[in-house]
Image (cartoon, rainbow, N blue to C red; front, side, top):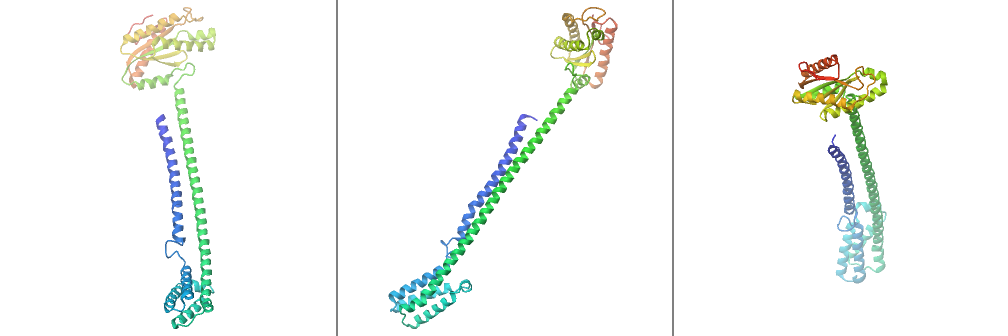
Length: 373
């Protein structure tokens, strides 16, 4: 997975987490914004008629009538205005809620009835009589008013407390959901990284399966895969064998033999150039695969390798024909294909056999090109 794709996935999950948290916070803000207006709409006593208590308005009418009778009680106009206010106060006072829940309501209504009849007949109303007929109902209405205010405050407090608990639950739930989102994101990242690590391990094991552990170059399977990847290209295949390698190991031991193999890999790589790909076929046998447009290029490559080994003058105490390490090469020029590779490999192997049968330390190109020692 590329770095850009990984960052896009990181940002994608982070964006989802932020958006979920933002949506939850908007929900909380919305509820908070609209709770207080609801409280004002349903529980406020100002700004609308339904919010004002009927007992308050009734009490005010009775107080106004009492004031008129005390100040202008002898005039017919004062009596008429006072009677009108008593009638208004009575109508607001005479409701089922007050009759059923407050014991002072019925006696107060009876006093107001008596007061209204006396006002209608034009009877005299001395101050003691007015106090008896109006102060009792006014006191009753005041008690009702205070009780209603207490009830209203209690209901409002309960509503606010419920709202506060609800908001707390929403906030806690939102935080839990957000934390769960982070946990899920972390779990996803953990699984993704585990999958990436497993993929890298698999690729590493696959690469190791195509490498020779001693020299670090490719093996026989890697050679076949590389040829298949170069379908249709002109290539040169060189099979390389170390002359009398068994005698080298017998004389110096296997650790020195392993060291010689690594030194020769470096030497072959330098002699054939960076374009060549090297492979260990097993034991002391190697192969080189290089782009090659003509047989003449392949011939030069083989001769350069033989010359480079001669110049290196690597000691070989077990060599029956000399003092230095030598190589035998069999090469072939071919066009990469599935069927062509097996034939090319057989031709190179046959050429190598001819070199070894004719004294080693040389190269041969295919089966129809003269060898050069």
